[in-house]
Image (cartoon, rainbow, N blue to C red; front, side):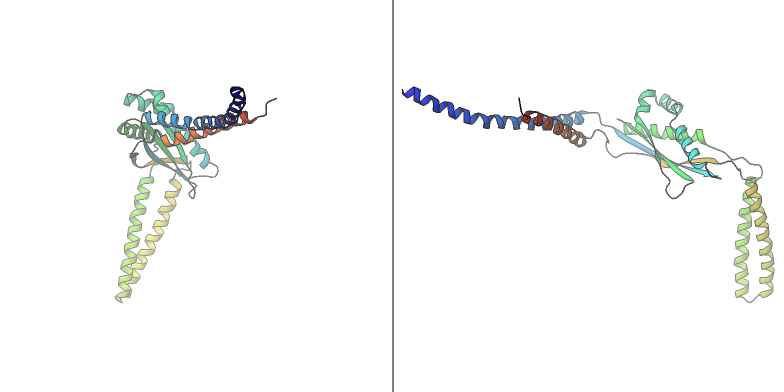
Length: 267
């Protein structure tokens, strides 16, 4: 009798403890699902190969810009900057695989903002060796600049520009001497210098008009590098913290889905 009467009480206690134990196990499981992707992502990223990034910037200016040509010319330069021929030339010189070189290369356009007649491109390259990354990006920029280098060769243009410079210097000298003569009370000398000044100003106007007539009418893009290529102080890849954050988001999505499935009423 004693065994018979005690058995129902033991069964009842077991039944009361089962929901609590099952609930704790479920939350532990969900917590593991939530954190596991973050931990795995962090470990994998930490073990990945470290890479350094080298960058260089090139500005573009349009000579004699005309309406409607600025955007088109800048877009053309961006296409030229991404030429596979440039990448092949640099990768061959450095002994690198062409496809690998292209994958590690990035080119971003920088909007001009205030000055609508100029823009810039930022070139970047990532590699395990910081020295190689800097050499690669500088070599690529050199190849690009050589491909777009434009020499404006117009007969008489350089001579006219030099003559304008001389006349400007002569004009400034006459202004200074005129002021000194007036301060000294030498009015006849000041008048003589003024006559020479007017002659120089007239001649300067003629030379400026000639220079403008000789300048090319077709818009030309001139590219120039800003400083030299530089490399990051430390590795930019991998980023374990970022990988862990993404893993945590993935774990949260998985855990939420499992929680919804477990709470769904069963028929």
